[in-house]
Image (cartoon, rainbow, N blue to C red):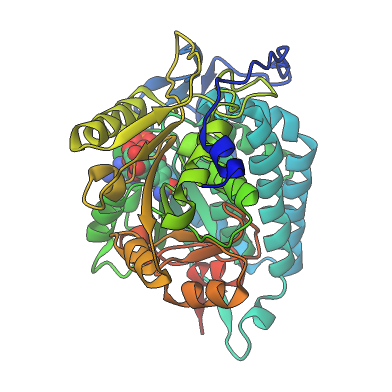
Length: 492
Ligand code: NDP
């Protein structure tokens, strides 16, 4: 080992940076005490008469009460979407549809600070991520698909694209508004109407979005938002008035939905879990790769389906890389999601924290070596320190299962062939990363990696024009880009 490598490997004591608090003002968001459902352009009381609380995962304080939709509510919302589809929206001139999407995009931009604060409050993600990633990307999706609305014939030449009808869309809690945008923007651009169900832990930005729909004067019933729990989602999936289901969430629920939809003739796209390999070769720009590894697994607390949760390191650079990574880990600031200096926020829910804790315990029991960033975790709320496991065997649960938390499992390899074999040795196939100076090696790897997205010398980069989706147990269908329109169209 050279002197430089030795210095990098010896992880020094945590850096004593004292950052003054930089809290984002929270009063820009006006939360109501209680939210109804958004059906046919109106806020309505749920027929169940039931409500549940949404809380801040950082403090456990209640934020608002939210309606719990039951079967009758699902039925009413599907009916509202059907009426809107048949009575105008599907026949509207495409350029007119585009105008609504452009309006929504612009309103999201105008109200982005408010939405970013609401998102961080409800989900626990750092404000700098909701402000700089979720909101700009959500607006960009609406802008992007607004552009396609009157160009569908060019997107699919020599075919006559027609909308499908009512889309039932179920989204998770890790990117609530962004997943809403991924789902609603292409559906509307293609001339469909939607019933959207957000996750029960993060309903607030979807509810605020209903204000945006009204502000944009979107015709009633084109977008309906029903809050509720898993049973609400299951009911939507099984409703015979829904023509297409789009789901993002766990592989387990995805399989259940696929079983429910099988044989009904209804269309389905599934975006499920992942266990991405982030592969670092010895000729990479090491400091750049370290930042990519950090972004790959600690962005959004690792609660990312395409997170680079399995780090594959070429053996010859293992020690310097781990040394640098540990040192970098010590500089991550964990804490208040609304503080602009926070890098890692709160875990989304108690259940998710328990799942992470259980899987991390299994890693220790199976013999992996754990390193955690020395940080003080707040007493209230749901928190987990950024964690790295070395000495990980491929058979360990932490190398196989999706942890969906700030936990990295490190494995090593010697040759590109071995890296490829290990990377593909998973039930999932959503994303992968390759770090190397050689373009030819990037192409060689990218052609052989069984992953829907392969990032080269970067990680977790998204763009509305770029399709995203999985292989194997990561699901099927693509969101984003021209490909993302196809699931919302039939061809005459
Ligand atoms: P789920 O798959 O349960 O939740 C995703 C969405 O589906 C939520 O809106 C949920 O509603 C809804 N839902 C739950 N059950 C059903 C059902 N039977 N039919 C239809 N819709 C349903 O994920 P969890 O929140 O339980 O997270 C569990 C694990 O899933 C995580 O630990 C992570 O590994 C993975 N996950 C993967 C995501 C991804 O982006 N690929 C996103 C989220 C989780 P509700 O929230 O109200 O229960």
